[in-house]
Image (cartoon, rainbow, N blue to C red; front, top):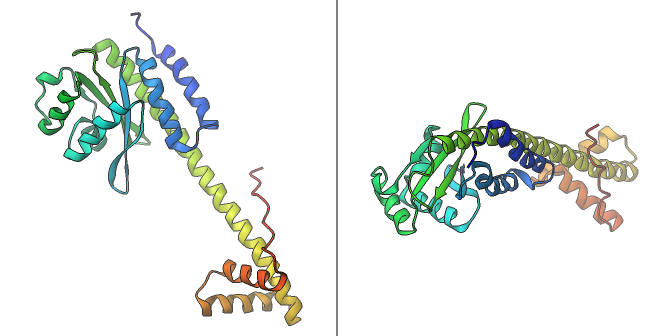
Amino acid sequence: MHEQQPGDLGAVFERSQSLLLTASGVEGFLQRLTELAAEAVEISVSCGVTARRDGQPLTVAFSDQQASELDESQYAATTGPCLHSLTTGEVVSIPDIDDDQRWPVYLQVARRVGLRSSLSLPLVVDGSTVAAMNLYSFSGPGVFDEQVLRRCLVFASLAAGALRLAIGRAAEQQLVDQLEEALASRTVIDQALGIVMGKQQCDAEKAFALLRMRSQSSQRKLRDVATDLIVRVTGQSPLSGRRFDRA
C-alpha cells in the first residue's frame, strides 16, 4: 500500500464537497461522508458519525449496520470511545480491543460482534466539537498504524472543514426559509387589508388596526386571522407570496 499524501486525500474529499450543492441538509452530507471514509483511509472500516440532539447522543450517519450497532451500544452504556471523543474533543484509539479495559460494558458488546480495533475522531467546527467520526475495523488489531492514523487525521480535518460549510449552508437556507415565510405572511395580510379597506371604507392604517385588534382578542396570529377573512369573503385560499430573491 502506497503512502497517501494530504493532497490525495483532498482529491478524494473534493467529491464530497460537491454534495454541499446536492445533499439534503447536513445529515445527508454526513451520510455520504461515512461512505467515503474507507476509501479515504485505504483500509476496510465501518464508519459512524455521532452528534448530539436535544442533549442526547445520536448516530446521524453510518456506512453500515455494524457501525450503527456499535455506536448505539455506547449510548446504552452511556460511555465509550466515540462518546469520549465527542465530549472531550480528543482522538481515541483502540489498537487492540483485547488489550483495552477502559469501557468494559461497551467492550464486551464490541468483542461479541467481532470488533478488533477502532479510532474515534472529533469533528471540530469553529473551536467546538460538533460530532465524532468513529472508524471500526473487524479485520484485525493494529490496523490504525502511524501511517493510517495520519490519513485519518487529515481526513477528519478536511471533513470538519466541509462540515463547517454544510452547517453554514443549512443556516443560510433556514434564513431564506424564514424570509420567504415572512413574505408569504405579508402577502396574505396585504390581501386581507384590501378587503377590510373596501368593506370599512378606511385607509390601510385603520384596516391594519382592525385586523390586529381581532388577532389580539382571539389570541391568534395575524396571518391566520387574515387567512380566515380572505377565505370567508372570497371562498378561496389567499394567493401565495413570491419567493425570496437572494440576488
